[in-house]
Length: 532
View (tube, rainbow, N blue to C red):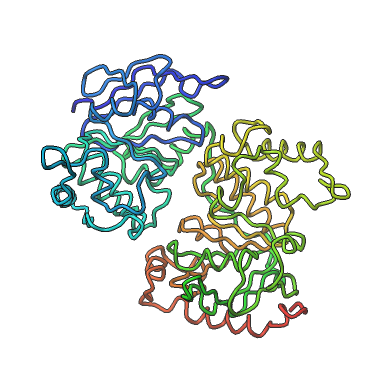
């Protein structure tokens, strides 16, 4: 096969940083090529060079056998290279067809007006050609994230892309949407298109790619056929050491209830019940997991537990005290830590530096404040400790949160919340956007906290993560708990059925759910002031 892309000795330097160091990458036409590596390994920088967002400090870019100099993305698009970024660049209030043709609209009346009917027809034909099943007249704000991603792909195809770069394409997709995306890859390569996708997920690289190139510290450390490697080998290439993939078993039996959620309901601004009569308990020394497709009430449930919103019904108990009406500040002081699902909206102030962000939630703690005055030297020491222990890159306490990659933002938040020494940790998607080495570290720290007696409520859309870490596992669908099951006694297929609102053939959850609900109700004193 011929090469669609040949990056020859690419070096890209920024002030004080070598992001890519003499990287050579060869991608065969009509193939799917995964670019794998930890956060900060140089993956996105390398693809930004190919897409014309950056110009290389040294090296050559060759596309379809011709050496190119891309001074802008427009040059790359003209040469048949398109890029779909992790954060979609779509206009929510416009239709699918309007987004796809934006800037390249077909014209009529001698170019005086946009030919909207032709635009819809061309988008429909393009969608049908690749089996995308996208409605050209639907508004972006009304379609799922998976459909939005297809719109981004169609936008690149509409502009004539033969090489498609996708940056962390599965980061915001459900498991079902990930499978659909890989089906799209097959459709595209069958039409002769070439796919390069950036990822830090080993399983996805092996499942979807023909070849996998691993970057580490800005260098290419190896390219291997996906069919001829293992997860362990790829992980070792990524981090430069052996990575232990197994989760250790609990070292102690769970203790008494730390969190008691009793009949909690949440009604949204539209008057819709998004959480309906949810009850469960999380005990000392236990990880209680909640799995489910995003958008089934997990966010609203967690906000009610952590004090970001008030439940419309039910109660929340923390260590024997009813905290339903307590503020976030009061819950933090009582021992509740929280890793939010949206790190930029809920976890960080993006324009603050890491010293200031490390203080968030701690500003009233005697360790960092004296009679209302912030102890900035102590605060700086705290931030530098978090940066060092949680491997935040670059290791600069004066860097703003906005200057960090998503994965490093996540590591900083996780460190700040873990180091509160909480009795209850509520962790929502704690490893979203985080590489394999950091994921292993975060998982180990979660289990350390469990083994030290903390109660951990883990909410994650990653089935492998929530199933492997949880001591008990609940599945949430349309605001209700479908079942509470033993993670070791349920298959991924059965969990998938529960996540879709269906019951498996064998009775996995209804009995356990009934028992758990009855136990929570029987221990109602836990929220009234008495521990069980």
